Image 1 (tube, helix red, strand yellow):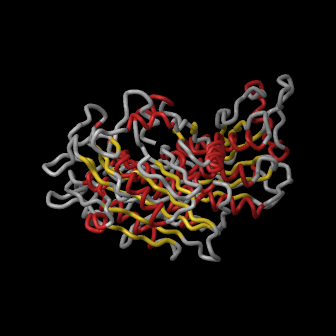
Image 2 (tube, rainbow, N blue to C red; image 1 turned 30 degrees about the vertical axis):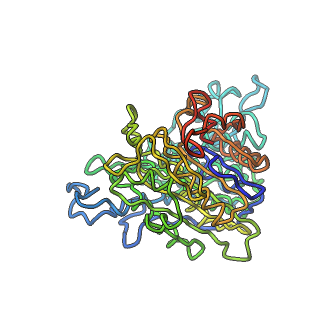
Image 3 (cartoon, rainbow, N blue to C red; image 1 turned 60 degrees about the vertical axis):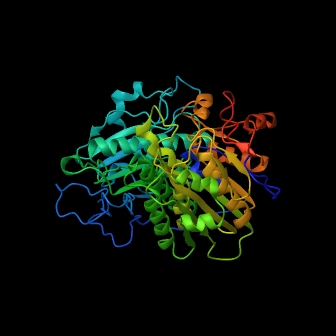
Length: 545
């Protein structure tokens, strides 16, 4: 560890961007939910021509065939384009008489549970779908209890020219299985919308499925499936398979619909989470000649300007960071033509005082060439080394829309590039962090921990956060240990770790808690400085933490 925190509950976690939207689920931070759909995230001065159109923020284009001005020779790009959030509405019909057979939609879906453990029992259609039973008579043998959640029968065209299909919800009806089924149903709905170019979809489902938790999971997954990035395409290559989909409406198939208000609030929260998730994806996908520290800082300012006053943005340049003694962070930034930008977004609840103060810190290397220890593989993918900062800004966007109560949240990103020029740090350099600790640079490609050192000192000493969560694409050693489908979690606060593990299970984004072995600190000893920035051959996921 680069510093010894004075606060009693302090946590440092190195995880991938998959947990960004689940930070809100940490216990102890209640959410104040808003109703209504999320507005598109568009930079100031931009306009849209339709709900799914794409706005160019770099400059005004005279025609669709003109080249994209993603950069200029003399100065780096200062803005980044963000895709509009889908405006497809997700609603639940409150009329118990609603019937999928009489609903005027282009695609009708019957969602139904199987028969539990009774494999020999005949499948029973929901009561309101019984008039359509003959249509599916020939498919009953295919729709047995063994059909997994999300699987579907072939789409059938009805006499009114609309189309109908049946989607399985599985045989289990407990809360966990229902949320999992909701996600699979959302994937099926998105697939049907794409293949059939549906403008509206009605889903008939049993009331026990129509819970706030299930509809929240459905909405988040649906919007995630609908994510489309056309920012760097032109002409015929610009494609949005979901542009015609206006609505997805659920109908209660058995008349037992309960908490309508809770469902509406859950869907509203889900659309806010989806807005943050979409922003995160856009930032990670952005090319490094567009997304650099300056344009990332511009994005942060835009989040604040669209927050309705609950979010404030502060961005410090190299001179200000130098005055604060951030030598570890600035040492990494010296090799780039683009000035480093230290981003600090502060969320304050609109009503009442905050009982807790949370710090969320993300690694912001918008491109990592490795420095003089230049990378020999995956160079073209190193734009994703700012995934931690994308997660943090995506979470900030969601927080600005949801507006949780009783908590003050600080979003911190020390953004820069790790490049090579005549000023770049060299192997053997000794850097001084803002807490006075000296660090011997044994490898310039172990740069993320240097930038995070000053960022964590800042959120601890300057912000004074009660709890700190850090997200970063810090080291490939974590992937060696856990593979590419799971993030590693290192923690000194068991309660917060438990909360995040619960959020992981809630979302399906997998994490695994890793050890903080004190004896491994020996690997970081330096002969001439307080510590080095690189451990030994083994335990490469633990020593950075």
